[in-house]
Image (tube, rainbow, N blue to C red; front, side):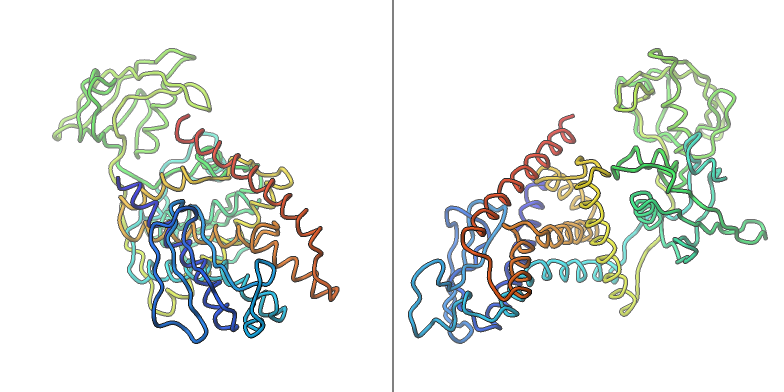
Length: 456
């Protein structure tokens, strides 16, 4: 139920803000708006305020089909317009006014993202500290010299280092570096009186087409440092059969000393021989006493091959820090994060277009609904971050030069501005058909990816 409510609220808010951008600029330009609709199809709710802007008599509507909305304006191309109101028709407005009205929708979504990121920065959010777990064996991070337990204080590209506030902050920078093919410099805090040191993660060496778990496994930095503690044990699982209990602290697996939860998870994954599980002796600390337990994992199939599983949560919660910004810095970081997400989205779209990035990065309504529910269950700030991310995606997507989107109309106006002539009706119809076809293909791929992700 939470997923459905969170999804509907997200869609309603993002669509309403997008359409309000069109509506507000249209009113400011003197265009008469006939209808403001959130959703399509059968009308569920209709409202016509008595007090409106001069010359306006807009009808506000909520439609039954929530995946979209529209602002219907007075326009001679869509029906007869009285001579006394012709100056209020959209098609009679100057080019700059028409372009501003069309661009206002995506810009409103980007501004909403800035507001949401700013609010999150002001409120503050609890995030894991940027202390690294032991890296994946033979990964980029291990070859770069990381061993686990390092605390990252600053990171950046091309030598321009900025403070790292949390593990999520570091993870975002690694994502940008891997997808852009840029090396990331890390500053590691000194320990026991030693000075801070720098090392380079050569992210340009990996070919990252998907921002997924496999990309982070190649990098080797998957999670923050955690105690190698056993959490909830599933009934009937390998962990229960072995005698493991919640709260057990694992000190060693076989001859390997265990120092953090991520390392323990990797040991469990690797505890198979081909397709057969490998029984290992675990040294466990329980109630202040050291005991030895024989653990035989279960073999599970994953996209990368067969791995071991024990059916228990592994790793205690990481150390958390409160990430909060001041008034001015919070606004600035909101602007910067919106710009970074927008730029990364554009680059990923470009890479998908030329085949350098996988089409699996396209997500549709099922994935959005799933993440809406998950983020809402984590609290208000996480839900706001989710809304900001989707708002940026909606704004950037609508600026794509597809004829059926706002970006396509802006391309028409660019042509008109350069040539002094508008696109002919015949070419407009051809472009519209092509745009609809391309959009349907994109939606089909996104829906296929949704089903694949959610139902395997």
